[in-house]
Structure formats: structure tokens, C-alpha cells
Image 1 (tube, one colour):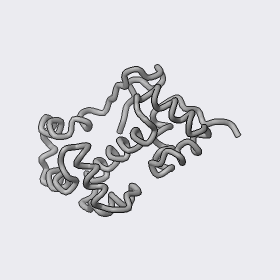
Image 2 (tube, helix red, strand yellow):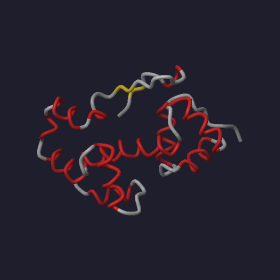
Image 3 (cartoon, rainbow, N blue to C red):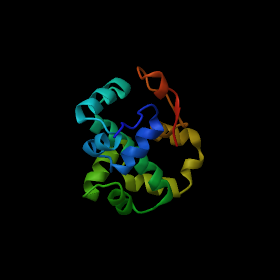
Image 4 (tube, rainbow, N blue to C red):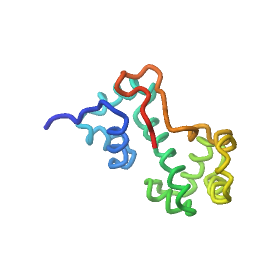
Length: 143
């Protein structure tokens, strides 16, 4: 069985979502060893596979919370076993708990882009530049 081509971010994200944001399942989905996946993510993203997956899982959470008011539903759909763990990780990453994000988002505050970017800079724009990545993963459009 041939390896899945690991040449663009969209491929990685699709397989990551199918893998439930778990590094072992991601390696299996990409048809590489866990050690090789560790080398890839370190070279491409400067972090461990699970840390990279956790960051993207939280980005997916913010997108899902924009559409849903249920923190609990989003937490469970992204594979968190406890809502409290999801809330803690979301707050660590974004500086505010998901309930505040939902309240803030559904009150129409996000219509002001500069305010949105001030509180959630990761969501600003939809182009991401990864420094030190192979050329095929650079300047990838996200979202």
C-alpha cells in the first residue's frame, strides 16, 4: 500500500479530521510511521504531531462554535471526553472560554473585523504562512 502524498495542508487536515485529531491514527491514515510523522511535523510546523493536531482541533472548534451555540456538542464532536477539558484548552489557546466566544459571536460583535482580530488573532484573514516549511505547504489558504 502506497503512502498518501503529504504535500499540502488540506490533505493533512482532511486526514487529521478523519483520524479524530489523534497522532497515531493520523500516521496510519497517511501511511507513515509515527516516527516519520514526527519528523514531518517537526520540519513542516516546528511542533510535535499531537501539538499540531491539538491546535487545528481548536481552530475547528472556533469555526464550529460560530455555527452552533452548544459548547457541549462541539466538544464531543471533536473527540473531547470532558467539556471541562475542552473549555480549558480553548481558553488556554484563545484567552477566553468557549461560552464567551459563543455569546460574543452570536451577539453580532464579530461583524467588526478589527475587534474579532484583536481577541482571536488566529482567525484573522484566511491565509497562513508557515515559516520554515517545505514550499508546497507555504502560503496555504485555510477555511
